[in-house]
Image: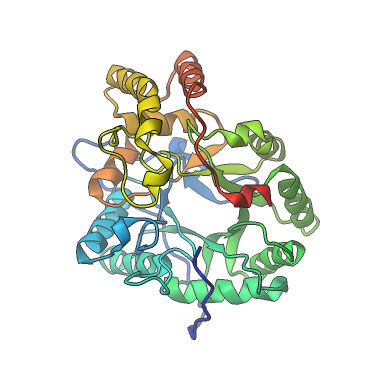
Length: 367
């Protein structure tokens, strides 16, 4: 996990709002133009497409990108950004710790996203980009003011006067009540449209929801690790609590970091840190599930990636945010929308997935 840095970033916060997105048709891929493919985040007024784009890998050299970030990868990320907007997916999730400058060769993900937005708006001033970012609950950050300070630094990196969704990235070791107060302050100051949390268990989710409710502020979302082969939110009460409270579950790692796409095999496992999780033995055990995903996809003329993402969307109150590194991935993700697996297929895939060994999660979920 990256360390916190203090930024000497100063900027003015104008009140100018961006305009609505204009989706452009792309040959061979459906463009999202109707409100049917959008949902409100929790009890907020913020509407997003049923699938967003995660920017965890953008600029990163610690976990992704084989420990290097270069011009080719910047071009790929920029292509993914533009292609997503062209296809009607206009919301992106980043965080202040993604692409920490303390990592050799890394570029902050917020900085990259801000650059992409600026360049896009120079060509298309009317485009709207929905931005979500996160506060890192590091041990030396105390109280509500630490949230506002970090948020303003994020806004400077993004080059924006406000963001649409601001989230607590994980529960802190201490000081969580102050962090929640800071989220409420950010809404009242007009620096964010709505707020959420991430990696919150059932108990912490209820506490955050009730604390914000007293100020008349809805808790819009809880972003957690959730995929066909990592269904802990179903087992630990988080999914049920989100449904009960009307809090949208944002699913990160919805493709299990690529393991569910069919790209990796026992003879071709992922490189870097992911190879320690998705080992050849694990991938061998996963093959029956992957084979069935592929078969179901052929019935719809869809890829395994699109089937797996659709499975999550079909759970209801779930918005997956797969990470797009290039144009082709962005286009493929858009193909997960506009159709639905049958209930029998949904249940069959869950049953098959239950036969595989669960993958490793993150320790934040147990705080």
